[in-house]
Amino acid sequence: MNDKPNDILLLAGKLLTIIMQFACVIGAAVIAGLALLAIFDPGWITSTGYESSLGNAEPIIGLPIFFLLIAIFLGSGFLFFRKLKEIIDTVGEGNPFDLENASRLNTMAWLLLVMQFLVMPATLLGTFLAPWINAREDMSMTIEMGPDVEGILMVIILFILARVFKHGAAMREDLEGTV
Amino acid sequence: MVKLDDILHDRRMTLTELAERVGLTLANLSILKTGKAKAIRFTTLAAICRELNCQPGDLLEYQDK
Image (cartoon, rainbow over all chains, first blue to last red; front, side):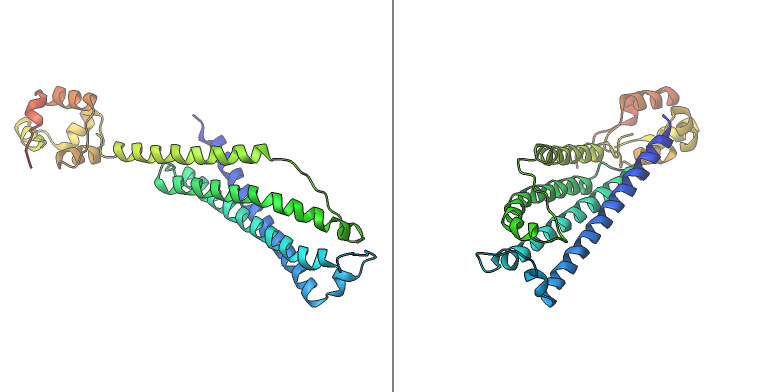
C-alpha cells in the first residue's frame, strides 16, 4: 500500500484542526471585543432606534449570557479540535491504539454533547435578542431551529469509537510479548 | 520456562543464526529466550523446532511458581 496518500490525508487533517482551533481563538477574540465594547461604551447598546418595552433588558441581560454561551461553545470547539489533532499525531506515529486515544475520543464526545446542548439556549436567546439586533444597522442574525441530527449522530459515533479504541488498546497490549 | 539456551548450545547455534532461520527478529527471540514472552505462535514454535530438530517439550517446561 502506498503510504503517500495517507500522509497527505494526515497532513490535511492536521491542517484542518489547526485552522479550526485558530478560528475558535479568533471567534473568542471577537466575543471578548464585543463584551469590552459593551462594558466601556454602554451607549453602543442603547444607540439604536429600538424602542424596548423591557427597558433595554434584551441587550443588557441577553448579551452577556449570549457571549458566555458562545465563549463556552468556542472553548469546547477548540478543545475538540486539539484532541483530534493529538489523535492524528498518534496515527502518524503508527501507534493509534492506546488508552490515551480512547480517552481523547470520549472527551471529544462529551465536548460535542456540550456544544449540542448549548445550541438550544443560544437559539432561544437569539430570538430574545432579535428585535434589538434587527434595529441595528451594524448587525444581522440568522436563527436556525430544529434538532441537529448529524451532531447527535456524531456524538454517538464518538462514544462508540472510544470503546472500539479501548478494546483495540487491550488487544494490542495482549499482542505485545507474543512471538 | 523456555530452555532455548541449552538446545542452542547443544546444536552449536547462536541466537542470531536461529533468528535468521526462523524469520524472527533477534529482539523477539531474545524476549522468548529470557522468558519475557507472554505468548508464542504455533508457527514460531514449529519453525524453532524445525531448525533445532527438537520437540516442543524439549523447549518448554512448566514450573509452578
